[in-house]
Amino acid sequence: MNKRGESAGDNILFNNLIYMILFILFFLGMFYYVLGFQNGAALLEDFYAKEISRMINAAELGTETEVSLDVTKATEIAFKKGVRRSDIFNFDNVNNKVIVSLRLNGGTSFNFFNDVDVVDWDIKLVSGGIETNRLYFKIVEKQRESE
Amino acid sequence: MNRSMNRKGDAGDSLMFFAFFFLMIIIGGGISLGLYAFYGQGHDFRQAEADVLGKRVEDCFMKNDFFEAGFNETIYKKCGFNKGVIEKDHLIYVRNQVGNEFFIGVLDYKNQCFFKGAEKNKNFPRCAKFTITKSGQEFEVIVGSNQNSRSIIL
Image 1 (cartoon, rainbow over the protein chains, first blue to last red):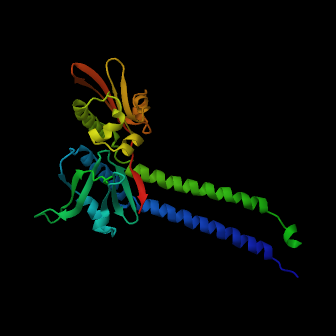
Image 2 (cartoon, one colour):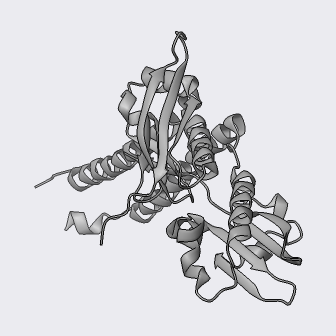
Image 3 (cartoon, rainbow over the protein chains, first blue to last red):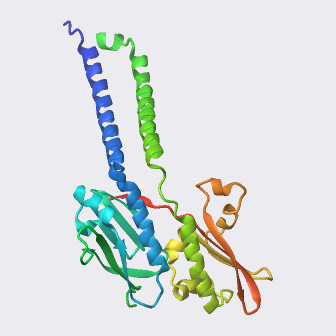
């Protein structure tokens, strides 16, 4: 039986299919990477994570300290991208980490060396200020599990 | 039989696989380079962090004896440092006038920070070096940081 083009046709289709799949995976990866830089989100995440970490590291031990930081620029970008208010800033007290996320499904983390816990964090409007958002959080002594 | 006999161009066809990956690397590298050129590298926080750590070490040093036995374990509680974070990417090093040393963290930062040309290499840590005077004695202190931020997927 003359099945001309059978093996050639199969090979062309199969090879191209593999290349197409690899290209799509590569494209999705690059797209996700580039999206992180949109509006400078990745850079701002990096900046705010380090700035918050600096504030935590500078806090005195043994006292409860309430800290506030102007995060208007960060929240503008995050809200534009659809990030929920409660997801923008997070503190991992187990691993001593601050996590800033100005984009969906991604973020930047930075450790702080001060052995404290960060609690009661929230983003609020500055009283009397329409366009200013501020992050408030409390730095307290490390809550250790009782032995 | 036709299938097994007609293998023209198979070798070249397989080699295109490498050309494809090379092309992807060129494209990916070009995009990354362009983003880096436009946005820059971000904020290098390590020197600032070393300075803050140095201040905390100085305050703690004035209240405690770093050279007492076992202080490399109790320092975390007495000075309020997190052990995991300090040991991973930081150094606290103190030396007295007779040459006794105390350190926690990555000791090699003591060298890496001060190599000739290290300040131009972003892979080397950043350190703060200063002297503390306590009870008439002088102590050399070096604190270092090589912590960078990490991207995470949520």
